[in-house]
Length: 262
Image (tube, rainbow, N blue to C red; front, side):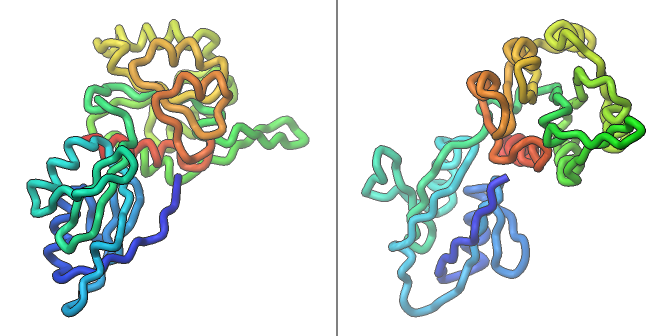
């Protein structure tokens, strides 16, 4: 998951600017005058009364829908800048700061009803530790548990679909409260069965995979997500590639994307 340093904005009224960034751009107040955006970007607001060099600042913000966000800016006291940054229009905040919008996310994500995760290489870093008596263990990222909870609150069903036969898949699934189907050879067939079981279309399924054995299932799913270090054949299929590699917060990042899309 990308980490962005805070951008400092000089503003006339912290409360009004905080309200503007909340309503127009989906930022939330973390503490004091620090605002956190839907993709982890942060703004530090500093109140000044005399000089206002805000117009010299260009803030590039990632949003799930450029057109909708632009409308939000215009409807909450912002404006349209006269100049363009390349081919992208610039917008104005309350104190003349220029806001460049970059689209990021999964268009139409509000249609998703089921999220299916591969295990190795998505929830793990695709490595395994084997003890001298043959016991296998993996390392999981705690932030993914939080991400799963965030996605659950959106009303989306979630489950794990893995070729791995190791019991650790079931153990981890139980820990984060997910159903796990493991030891699967033909993931595409199981995905068809899941669509029928849940009475949904394949177009309403999001699949997160990382290697060539996920390709057939991913090709069927309406939404396709891959970790940053996925196999090239999977990266070429993906609608969204996370900044995080497998086992390093892929699901937590996905949660931010899905929440932002709402």
